[in-house]
Image (cartoon, rainbow, N blue to C red; front, side, top):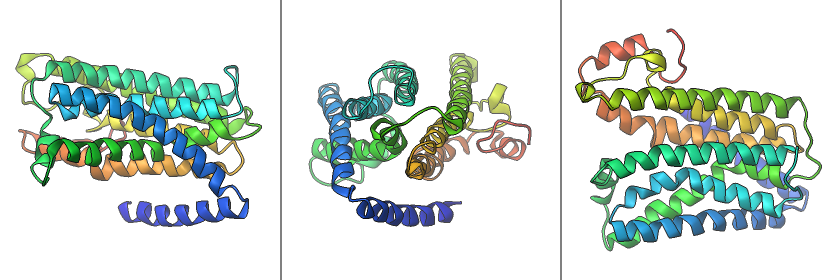
Length: 285
């Protein structure tokens, strides 16, 4: 699957550039994308300043969902729509619901902790030079760019002309709702499990976690593929697939599952757990 995604990115990038160039839209779209990126970067820059004061660069995790809200808001403002019963407003509401809930969920965990997340500790050990500057360039700016790429279907829907409700739009919303419910339920189940002292160091193997090792990630990916389906209801809507593919690649191969697998495989019962569960899909194996 990893190789397929890499091939997809190469073909997708080439096709996107060709389409924009042939329709004389390259400069216009890149300009609008730049404005959306600046909105996300501005928010993360403010968060970075707070992180400097607190000496906790992992504050960026709490701001991840908020960055998408900033980008989506900018896209909506520069688009042709006003708040109403239109797909652009709907996708804005979806991003706000997801982003605010995620920020609240991660933010509470951040406030309970007293030290920097070990992922960032290991990352910073590899840096040379000024740590604060490295953090801004390697974490905050990079995450603003990644958020922009994942937000492609949202931006596309918000700035497209004459977008209306159709089968793709309705199907995408339905898929998004399934993903949102799955992520909320999975996060709640894990939070209640971890709140009990007797479960410290144990594997969560109940509820949705009985059937999948990462049902919360399944929910998140489902939401973004739902928004990508909505984009298919617009002209050149295939571009929205790029954003869903990016978040899939990040979660499955980079910053989501791999570091968690590295930690969890040290726990008792891990081998039996992976034999009896799926990776993402929370259904009986």
